[in-house]
Image 1: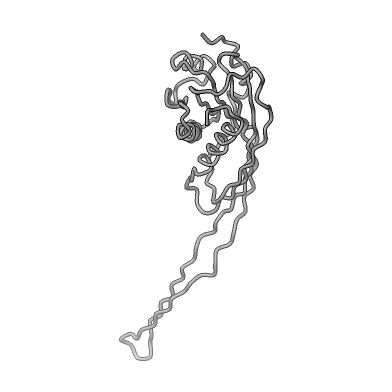
Image 2: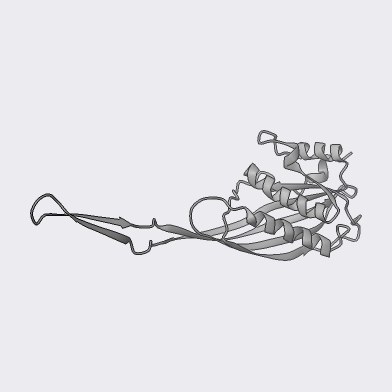
Length: 217
């Protein structure tokens, strides 16, 4: 049975920031914040994956990316969003119930701790024009049609954000490892969302888990 004190460090559970990103390209840098504790009961084999963002869809996408990467390395993992919907309360009690149901040996928690964005409006290219001239039924009178094609202005958004990821041991009821992942992305064009950044984050997080031998491989 997991005690109520297990999630006392999840202070940013009700974080109000929004993560909806459409990157043209992204760069991720990992920094280890806490080395693996000597008491860590590694490697972990059954991990509950939790992302703490205000948007359910963003949580679901990052959790799915992490779970897929863990599964490819032979570690069983479950995304918290696969056991809840948008109306499920994001509380300690909710996650503790999941742990009891799954009998997990670890919890991986990722939260947004910082985000900065700068938007720049770019002018459209010179318009392309077509000119059509044709005679009319009247002497020396011509019909002229000029059509211009102009692309709309576009917006380039440069963003940088920091995610903090910790892994908690269910047995020891404490955080045994922590990293920060810093990414810079550039978004151009319209508002259509491209969630490749979540795939990159998932790969970076799990790769570091493997390097630090928190999972079997």
